[in-house]
Image 1: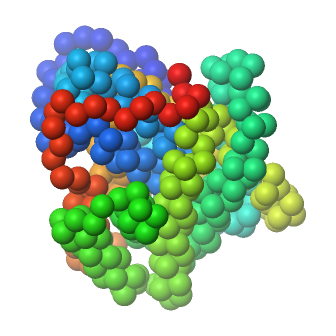
Image 2: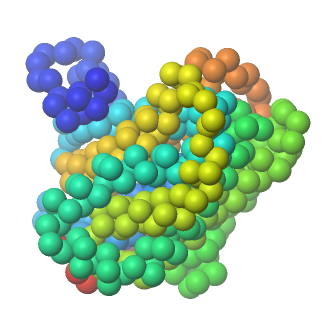
Length: 380
């Protein structure tokens, strides 16, 4: 029902929706970023356990689209449509729910079995879409970048997915959802190390705020063995950051759908031996089975496609709203549907991390007439 509403938005006069639309547009205007900054912010969208590749390959395409739509000013000014708002809500709900579904699926599935089934189902969605959208070039692009897709499948899909699946047997889905939001901060830190980011006082303050939130949360996970599990989630977020940097440097000329499908296939092959060996001996309950199906088909497959539709429709500066909504949605799912407790440490930690992400993602103002970066090679 949710996906159908995204792909086929209903038109009509809905007063309440207009109110939400207006509020969302005002919030999006506050989050509007210059060209160059926008693309890096959007990369954080794939730093959730629902995706298999970063958006670094979209830098050139996004820069060109933003400039062409605004006559070279470097920002995307068109107001969001009802369809855009529906897609933002859908992505936030789907990806925020991923942590809840992992927690439920962990009741019946071993970590390797869960991850293998999840990426296998994701392949059923992403591979056909990549083949159809790119036609004959998809296989050619995948062959040319086969080794990079294997590396990305390990550090940005199989590894983080396994860490999440294991960690949520010991900590709540709410805590996992909050801690994974640190990925953009790690991306900035790695960018400084590799010379891709400038050291600025405000952005360093963001890093310190984010790390303070992590320390606060890791220090009070609220369950036995929670410290190690919480650190595993932080490690998964670091893996996503490494994947973003790797993609921007090695796979910038490869189509994003090919990257997503290829890394998903690589992760599926890596986890297949252990995943098949550790499949449940008996038929799991319907809740656990439905959780795996939703994680694979919706969270790892359909949501990735909706993401690109949203970027093309609303622009990158509006799409980053999803990044800030996912942790809060994850907490709501955990508290309302799984009965998890909402502690003061969770609220403060979430606030510190989100504030850190906002500050770390901010660059110094640039001229609105600044020239956009050249498109990445091979990106249409």
